[in-house]
Length: 107
Length: 117
Image 1 (tube, rainbow over the protein chains, first blue to last red):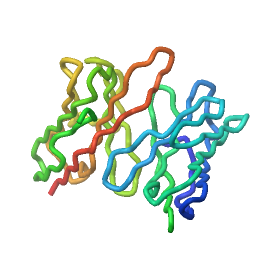
Image 2 (tube, rainbow over the protein chains, first blue to last red):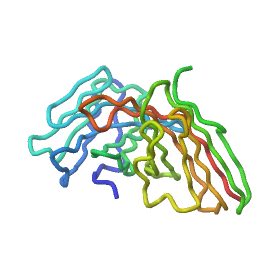
Image 3 (cartoon, each protein chain N blue to C red):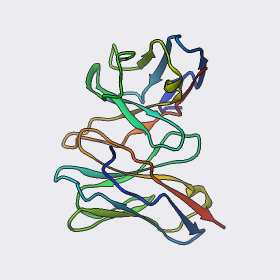
């Protein structure tokens, strides 16, 4: 079973920041937090990952709480092409995807 | 195109038949993963290889499923005696092996959609 809890769906206005939460209260010390997204009919796409420090790349920022029990993926300026299912995954030797959050970016 | 490729993209078969899917990973990626995805669900891990060695298999991988990566390059996933419940998207992913990090960024292929009638 997935070790994460995410809202089923979220909406975001185009051009605004999208903040996607994830709870992983049972995370263990050596497990990373990964985010992937899946656009309809395509394979998942890697976004970002982190262990305990906040991370930023060209796609997004990842904020991990100090106790590591939750995290937030931030898309700073959402576009219509960011509409997808976003998966938060916790893992060490393998990855267990949950059902993810369906993000809809609206004009 | 230097991404992960999968063949075929679609497969329709009758219950009881055997099917085989192929995955070509990104060149020089040591790790190769197979996942299964059903409608409305996230991908479910099936198995993964590091070079030619199959290091982990999910309990989802019944005896009817077998995966190989004979030369550490492409991989095949075979399903014997297919059942209607095997209908799903089968995804392949590959990743490089980076020292000091257990799981690296996985690059996914487009998937093979299997329909068992």
